Amino acid sequence: MEVRNPLLFRQLFDRESYTYTYLLADLRFEEKPAVLIDPVDTQVQRDVKLVTELGVQLLYGLNTHVHADHVTGTGMLKKELKTVKSVISKASGAKADVHLDPYEKLHFGNFYLEARPTPGHTSGCVTYVLYDSKPHETPNVFYYVPRMAFTGDALLIRGCGRTDFQQGNSELLYESVHKHILSLPDDTLLYPAHDYHGRNVTTVEEEKKWNTRLSKTREEFLFMMKELKLDYPKLIDFALPRNMCCGILEEQ
Ligand SMILES: N[C@@H](CCC(=O)N[C@@H](CSS)C(=O)NCC(=O)O)C(=O)O
Image (cartoon, rainbow, N blue to C red; front, top):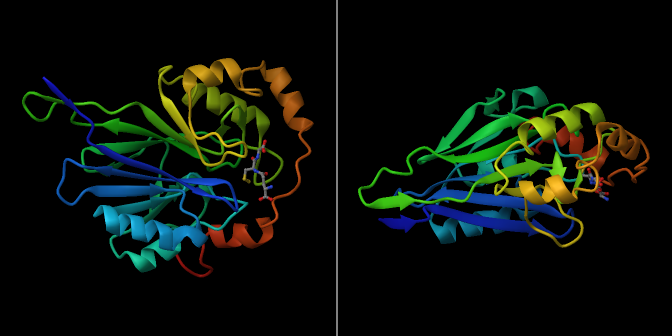
């Protein structure tokens, strides 16, 4: 039995906002159907260039939530690449081409992303969990893809999203992360929307043990979140109205 990894995966970083953007494509298909998670407006030319160089067909530009610290690139991407549809959770209340209900699946090739509701940082936050619907399709080939989830700002490496604006709710965050992220198999790779300390990936096992907030009791967590006292994101007033419509005022 031959083992092959059919996933094209790229992690991209924006140094201004410390945001990670993720490109995923299914290499089993000639057109390489692809998705881009959490693109940033100022990096759209970088992303379009990469999409072109890799020869993938971008089907969806997804947001994990309505971002407060940067403007999403999904609206600009749609203008550059006509195959792209913008995606966000229905609970976000934002405009997009596709609105996902809790646990809804979004397919690209034989892969799909399940939109698990992980509210608390914002009420519409989702974690996208990757699944392969056809690991045994070709005789004598087993398609092996590591378990992966894209946690947005719900879970950050050794931390979590703040809960002091945008319908933030620490109780809900604690509950939703434990129910829908930390319940995944221990070896699941977790990819956050940001990291401010030079890290790029973690696992469920690591975060259950070492997350400085979410590994604590609910009471300890609630106390810590109340005491965070972080500065307001510099771009919040500019970004929020735009991110309610794919980063471009008056557009989907
Ligand atoms: N300084 C940055 C904003 C940093 C920040 O508040 N990050 C958010 C996610 S983006 S809204 C967060 O939840 N941080 C949690 C933490 O513990 O740092 C700016 O001005 O944009």
